[in-house]
Image 1: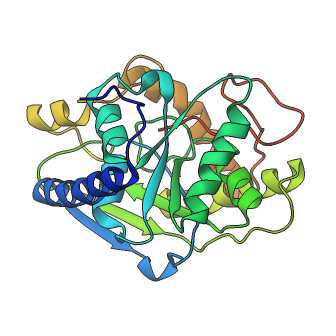
Image 2: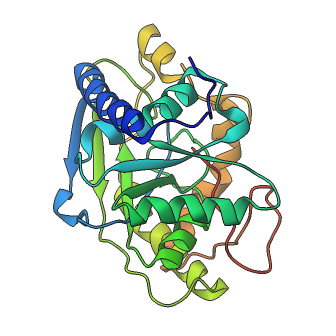
Length: 281
């Protein structure tokens, strides 16, 4: 077996992609009840799908419920993480992942790869928050990469909300709701990226704000939920505590009809100009 990251013949990559879509469709639907709402809002042309991120299974839920065409790609994982963890290996093997290589030329390379997806007629899914969190009804601040790529390539940004994956159990209903596409306007300046990022947050928050709080499942459900989760704070409990402030602030901003987003690259430091890609899934 060639090492992860080695070049793959396009024909083999295509076979892997379609095979993985079929297998994921069967496995996810065997375990859960998945439902797609607002499918008529999905553009037939290239687009950026900006989704909220609750669980390791989210990309696979999207693979199981979104239409076969246009071809679906995911931004991530980071190239140094490609061989770490079964989820990353499966994503890369499937041909649906666009690995991201941090470094001085990260923006240039990321833009080149995403532009190739759009030229080929595909859609790019990005976990807008750049991390997982533990509540279905909350939405953390969005990284600016989804808006940048949409504006840079002149494609719509589509809010896609996932509900029901904060806790998993057999037969759990997972809802994927599609919001109204946000159309790009102008070049990817700091102001336009910030405006589109704010609009995407508002649209996604509206889709998840009334999500019910899920109860802790049994042992199997807890095991399945945490199987590949990578909590930034080290545990679910620590993440709940850390994101409580974001949740309260986000609810207050939503009530006022305004959200102030700060443009941040991977290391979390403010930037003077837009364009840093988002943290990969």
